[in-house]
Length: 461
Figure 1 (cartoon, rainbow, N blue to C red):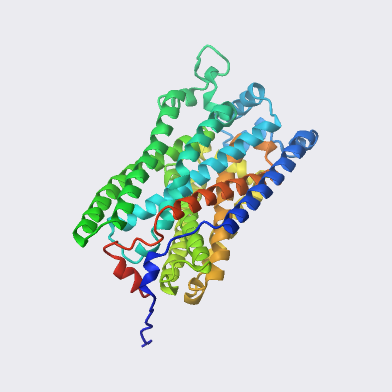
Figure 2: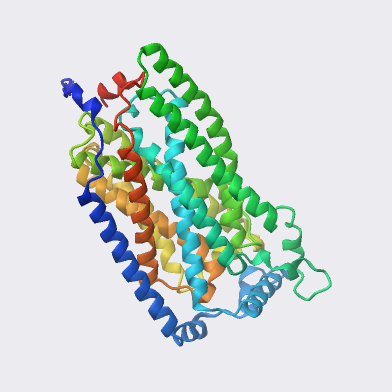
């Protein structure tokens, strides 16, 4: 039996305060600057490369009859789908700015998701009364500081590009007197309509931030508690607020996935999509939390966070990478075997396209194979360098997952990956990191009056 390893630390470490140094800010500004340069290069090439997409279109375009035969030769559903695409092509002729709008939407939804996952993590720790993670709870708390600017960017992007991102916003689809009338989309008008979408989205993101406000308020009040009774009272309040948030998030995260992502492919549906969308957010969020903890540890902070805490964080990344793969494969397998045209169209569009086919295999490699084998051993989960590399890989991989969810249904044969697709996420990473840094600097890095902190610094696995 292995001997118990005693992890001693200076209790003054409980009073450590994160200093958002000029060096850290400079690094973030460099990331943003590189992102801006790459984005500008991408915009330049998009604006000047007028013939590229025409050649790509000629090389890969599927005729309506070909798509119909792939989906179901005995039904007219593919004709409806083709009509939808044709209407889109006629009503919204492709312009390179559409690619800008779609990429903005991908990044807004992805980073808003990672942001709220930080809050969801904190809430889960409270309602399960987990003590091992109490020592670094400020990190996931800080993630939610992106939500206000996320809501702002969400509204700006939607106002600018909704008519090109969401086919269902075309009002002619609901008019039975026009050739563009679509009975399937018209049947979804109770849920897919602009007023409901806009108000509902504001309620969702605004509600997430409101819960963050109260959780953060009670969390910092906990630090100021002058006696154990007051600290326990704050803790009980946190449990109640967290329980309410988990219920709210459980409903709104699914609704958000249907509105913000699923409705891009308006005819398509999957009863597993809410879980799939959440699982991608969840793994990326956990990877982000782990990466931030490792970086803080390497910078000399979180002194009593040891290899046992890192091990458990590594187990979360490993386990939920498997969970994401299970959801991905289950959704694909059910649709593949059922062979229902209105469901298979989603995968046919991705698997039959030389533009998008490769991303399916990249996503599986990066989001499953690499974290599965990279974090399989005990030692791997306890090494900061390995965790850092795997977490960065997973965050990039799940960005590609969202790219694959949204791009085929919006850009279709005009989809591409270039400087802009690299630069824009870097800008978002920089903004996100800057806001997290500001948030971390506003409160003690360790919640020193947390009732379960003793469990955290004695944690062993």
